[in-house]
Length: 336
Image (tube, rainbow, N blue to C red; front, side):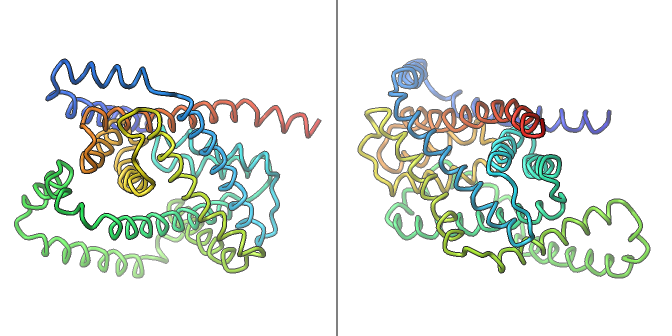
């Protein structure tokens, strides 16, 4: 019961935070500006969003193939159907709670493909590490492409809010040192008390995750098709880029924006999704602030943010629900 209440409270918290960001953006707008956002959203050409969703599904197919490539060196060859459905259910679960999707999709492979969860989870941690590296690379490319926009960015609400929070700290350097000391202290305590806590369930679970992570790293080294693994890693992020760019064509004000702007939206929008589960509320606001730097009116940028977020979220919800229905049906038929 306590665990259920904790999970519900987390969902309510992230939902409330998202609603707060929606209010934060909307409360200063005039009635005409709100009507403009609403009418632009309704009059958008949704065929472009549908095409973006198709590209998104293709990216998830590519992610499925990449995951299978990571599992192969361990001696596991799960079916494509089960692996793809597990990926889509994982994304659906992530809308509710942070990191729930990673555990969920590994649990599905354990149930239907008999793959130990600690081993598959190790490959998922490796995947997330690779995604983070790709995000950092995309950020660096975006930085050099848009050097001329730095001055404009310093005037944006995003930068001012970050700067304001930073200025509230009296001695930021002291915080870094304190964090470092805490990490060293925790490592020291762990080494000293390792034998005393080795029998506890928490220790065993953490150990399984760590060992699984190293299994994932080993599988990365032993991949039988490294070229295809690199191809899918790059393809996934190019697909994400084109997903954003295609939605630009859905309203007249953003039709002339290029892939360079789509890259900026992808990078900073991804940060928003990391900050708040599912990016609700904050993602459209970030997109609006980014597009203002490219001379797009704030109301149109906000509309574009909601179109991007709605397309991605609808795809995940629909694909997740369909996958939850299909998974037992396919496997029951196969076993029968």
